[in-house]
Image (cartoon, rainbow, N blue to C red; front, side, top):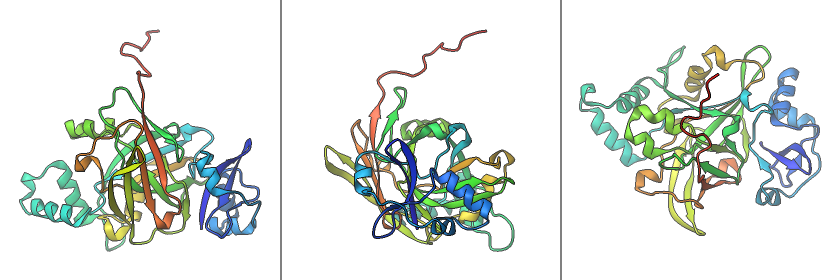
Length: 331
């Protein structure tokens, strides 16, 4: 089952788009509301949707083209939407993996911190017995104000050194009334980042992540297949100037999804009832790594057949800072 959120006239709606004819889910004004109804009824999201039947049909392609499709999960109060992620979780391409293993054989004393963490994930990210495995790299992306809807433009700050795509699979979660996290499913995501800033010094990784991002357009309900593959493209002036396949799913990862989820939700501050969590699971394919520098007006396109319609966003650089140096007032 694949679901979206969209604007219909002056109101919002949830719709099912995996059938022959896209149709609104009756009585569901938001994905959060629909999920909370399923939690209250103690049934799956699929069962909740099916119990409501099919509502009015609509033109999905027109909704996408018109910019009326919203992120598949959000919160009416953006401060109750956490956007986070984990890095160094994917094995990457065969070539990159071979190079990584050569370096791993050199001895721990010669490894960078990144390679040490990658090695830890290879050795302990998929626990075979009961209990959790090694914890991954973790980062904070922002709250719900950082979400750009599918088809929208990423606002690249004037102070940014770069604005590049990171195609990833994303987990979508709602925290229940008793503090228990519920996973609704997965979607595509572009974890837009500043890779030039990150490469200056790894300790600036946190700064490089504080940017806009996008997810969707479709939420795939249920488990993530062990192997999913798709394509990431950079389009300039209507022409594809770079494209590369990217992989995800546990077969292509050094951690299990369960291990990544545990090491996020083990913190009590991430289990507040009613909060929404959007969690990126990591990337292994970047145009920046191939020497590409993005420009305003470029379009990012990320596509995997398991997630239906592709996720597209453009790049728009701001001409001025939102906040000037010395702008903090003294009371």
